[in-house]
Length: 458
Image (cartoon, rainbow, N blue to C red):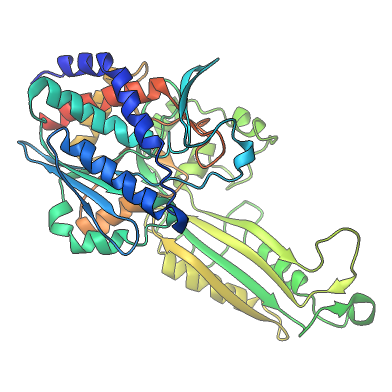
């Protein structure tokens, strides 16, 4: 089966493909808000019907939360599992949108045509690039090039509470030779990318309690311990002067990247000065001696995401507060153990705590990093296929963010994940006026057709 007629079909059917995407985008499948439960069900039903229209044996699977959509197509060669999610983020603040978030339209902008609406880039537009590539294959050849399982989740934007139990209960059905995940982006507008590193995450909120109530600073200042002072000492102790995290054992399991990967990243010629200038900064602030891409993609971090205590209103209220709190997150890489780091962090905080203060911890979840082995020949096969579609050669890159499903596919299904996406940095996902470039949708669909062709041929 040749890919050329499939690519031609994708080109000619682009208007119809966009119309189908618009239908899905009009469904307000916000998973975090119970008021939209029926809409999440409706989005799942829409996907089941669409998959069936191209010959996929698809069904909606109930969970304690929002349903999963699973579909199967038999075929020769490798078994591919394709993952995407049909749920979307809330739209607040609504007043910052230029139009109804669930009335998508194609807009002409100085950078080209874009599809504007919630879910366009994250993740309905990306999900449909793969479905449309399969539709074109079926239309031209009457069948798909290999065995494919479609797996669409409805809770990704609300923490995926049903995902791991569902994977465990259906592991035999979902296990594949490789998983394809379309929920990432291009390196830039010319360079497509396969993400091979995802950082893990550990989140902790700590509360320091000192006196039993807020105290008058004139009466108690100097004599009574101030929880904000204690918290400031703890936060200051988390990094040394070279930017390294000082939590004992923190770097256990952190590996250096290979020379081959470092050379590839250097060839991307990332301009960290321009990157920082865009947000009003000028100097790298992480580990001394590391490049910006290493810091973002391959090194762990410790960051304070929020801090509070005492009077926050206008003017002064001269008190020593009873409590002070901070939200602290750790981005993890390699083989770092979230549980071990969590324990070490707690021990460190307790060691820095004065006798008259107490600390409480409120964990908000933890997940290890995911590192995909590019020694698998499928990765180079897919990279070459991507390179055939885009102006510049595709790159293996890391990601500063976390996509836990890739790690779950590894740990539960023993299936390696390949993360390929076509979003751009300015897509405003999770923000008002989210968009997805028509070119990204079109070339993303063509890219999947090329990848399917290459992977099916081994």
